[in-house]
Each structure stands twice: as C-alpha cells, then as structure tokens.
Amino acid sequence: MASLAYDQKNHYINGEWVPAESSDSIDVTDSNTADVIAKVPAGTVGDINKAVSAAKAAFEDWAATPLAKRKEFIFKILQAYQARKAQVVERLVQELGCTKAFAENVQANLFEWHFGTLLAEVDKIQWAEPSGSAVVVKEPVGVIGCITPWNYPINQIALKIGPAILVGCTVVLKPSELTPGVAYLVAEAVHEAGLPKGVFNMVMGLGPTCGEALVEHPDVDMISFTGSTRAGKRISELAAKTLKTVRTELGGKSAALMLDDADFETSVPAFVQQLMNNSGQSCNALSRMLVPRAKYDDVLALCKDVVEKVKVGKADDPSSTIGPLVSQLQWDRVQGLVNKGIEEGARVVTGGPGKPDGLGSGYFVRPTIFADVSNSMTIAKEEIFGPVLSVIPYDSEEEGVKIANDTIYGLNNAVASADPARAVRVASKLRSGMVMVNGTNMDFTAPFGGYKQSGNAREWGKSGIEEFVLTKTVNVPPDVYFQCFPPEQK
Image (tube, rainbow, N blue to C red; front, side, top):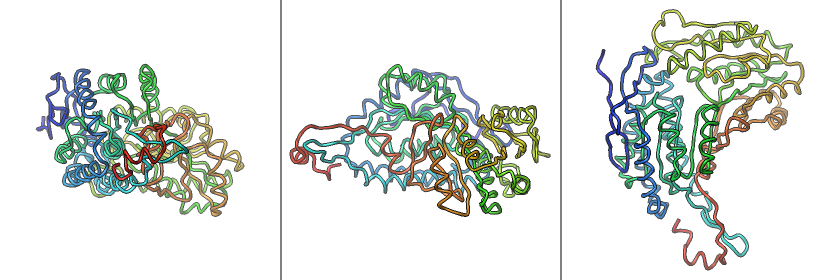
C-alpha cells in the first residue's frame, strides 16, 4: 500500500492536540481511486466529554470578551486559513472528489466569503435596545455542538464555527469523517490564531458514537447540524431529552419550474448545470424540472445536450467538469435509485446505471436524465444526491406549482419566466425557504434554509449570526441599563 497522506491520531481539545482515547481509526479514501489515503481517530464518548468540558469552562470568559476582540480573532483565523488554501484544495480533490477547478473557484473560497460577510454583517446586530420601559438584550447561546457534512465541508464548518465564536459561544466541532483533511486544516488555522483555550474544540469520529454523544450531552446548549433528513430526525429525538435548541439544514428535492414564456435556451442549461455542480451532491440541487407539456420534447433535447457535454473524470484532470461521488455508500445509493427509476417506468434519455467508460476504479457515475417521470415515482420523491435529473410535464401553471410543492422537502426551488413579475408571483406560491428566479445566483447576506423536512436553520449573513444568540428582557429603565453597559462595550 502506498504511504498515507496523513495518519492523524489527535483531536483538538482545550487549545491543544490531544491523543485520542482509543487507538481505533477510520480509513479515509480517495474518491477517484477508492484507495485508502489517510487515517483519522475514531473518537469516543470520552473524547466528546473532554471537549464539552473544555468548551463549558471557557464560555463565561469568552462571552465577556468584547466584540471587537472577538472580531480580531475571527480575522486571524481567516488569515491562517488563507495560508493553507492550497492544501485545502488538494484534500478536497482527493477526499470529496470535486474537480480542482470547483475546489479552487468555489469550495475552498467559501470559508473566506462567509467569514468576510460575517465580519461585515455582525455590526448590524442590535445587542441591546430599549423596549418601552425595559431593555431587550442579545446574548450568546452557550456551548454549541456543530456537526458538519462531507459535501461542502469547508462551507459548513465556516457557517457554524464562525458566527458561533464571533457572538461569544464556544464550540465543539464534529466534522464528517469522509472529508476530515480540511477540518484538520481549519483546526490548525484556529490554533495558529491563538484563540483562548476551550473556545474551539474538534473531535473526529462517527455519527452514532461522537455525534450522538454530543447531541445528548447535558452541557451542550445547542446543536447546529447539516446533513440528511434521516439523521436530522434522529438528532432532534435525542436532543429532546434535554430540550436543547436544534438547528437543522437538511435534504431537498428542489424543482425548477419552467413557465411557458421562459427563455428555455438560457434557463434550462443554467438549471441543469446547477444540479451537475459538485457531482449532484448539493442539498439545494434542482433535481426536478417541471415543464409545460407543449415544450416537453424541446426541453428534453436541451437537457440532453447539456448533460452530454458534461465530462466525468478524475478530479485532478483539467478536462473533467465533474468528478466522482464521495464514497462507495453514496455510489451504491445513486445506482439503486437510478435502477429504481427504470423499474418504475421512467425513460432514460441519457446516462443510466453503471460507470462511465474508462473509469473502472473510483466512485464515478453517469450523469442521467429521466423522462416520462410522474411525481409519485421514487426518483421524484427521494433525494438522490447525484447528477440525476427527473423531467416532469405539467398542463397548467397551477398544476406546476402543485407538483413543485408536492414533496416532504422545502429547501429550494426555481422559476423561469420572461415576465419577472409573473415569476415573483409564482415564487410566492412555492413552499420553500429559497426560490431562484431566471438564474442560480445567490447572495451571501441572504438567509439559506428551508421549510418542512428540509430543516429549520437559517444560515448565511445576519440571519446566520442570529442563530447563535438568545433574547433576554431586562426590566430596568433603558437609561439605567446603558449607564452600566454602554453600547460600545459590545
């Protein structure tokens, strides 16, 4: 076996690299080859307990640290991360399997984009304001358990630890064991920034062991989780034992609703490419396309043209437009759902089961378009998390809206129309936390989150900061309060 890229045996607890309690390890694979390339510790309940104890001990002093000082630390973390960005890209290409271009242009940049937005938006928070004869105060929640996924690992780590630390919370991070390399690089950046001991802690391990111990721990005040709806339900059940706050950003089955006056030549490629990005492994992917029946064949031809130009290949190959899926488990799931679509009568327009030619090793899949799909089919109901599109016809605008909303999820949708006012009216009828209109652009200051079983979190921008604060009413005249705590002290 080739030498390992790294063989990590430590967690990061109370400002130090601490040996794991157990010698058990977790294999990390290269998604492009399926080879084991690294090992990380399989954390234990004891490791989690140490991390939570450190976070709890650090909370009081950190919460009392002036905001200006906390901002300085966030900026130092950002600078230390930037110095490791090339390593982040390298690990994303291997462990996640996204192309080097996508890692460099999107994935690795997300930490900087969100931290930059965070530093700008935090000054908009009203930490204390009069409310009649009382004062309403915002205070940090406390100890935050952050559980992050593998598909956008840097993004989700930034969105949780950044605002939590900035507002005065302390953190225990349990990152995904499938893409652990970037999490260790973030922990190195935090250590270099000189954050006080216990403010940031990280334990590597499996969800059923470390994740559940973190959720159930009585000294953890809040869980911020991004992942599957199935796991989100389990976390909510466990957290109910202590009635702690739970914020979840979960799955989706988002629809692109093409109205009959849409610019199909522009919108269809944009929406299909949004799905293909990251090999379809995005919670907000537009995996259903709803099309007027009269335009159905034309749109299928457009979709087919876009997808057949997608080049699946090794993530470090500059000619590849998408790389492999992240793991064997994910590959098996996507294959199972593609086969299920065929069994239930959907027609394969392009793609289908199996691996692309010449890509026998690694977790590669064929980008697939299904036609003749009804919204009752499994492929239209379940989140596939791969480059698989279901194209569904409809006969009226009202039916299109009904089909879009006929899902347990509610994270994202899209509308295309030549009439922006019409598109906005239709967007108002869609039961999702986000709606894209005539494109896929998003704003980092606007909230990211869903309805229904897509979870209750609102990340990004000012809303993402407010996730980590509590509201307190102090029943004292405002002038008395502000004599004790002038606004600039925050």
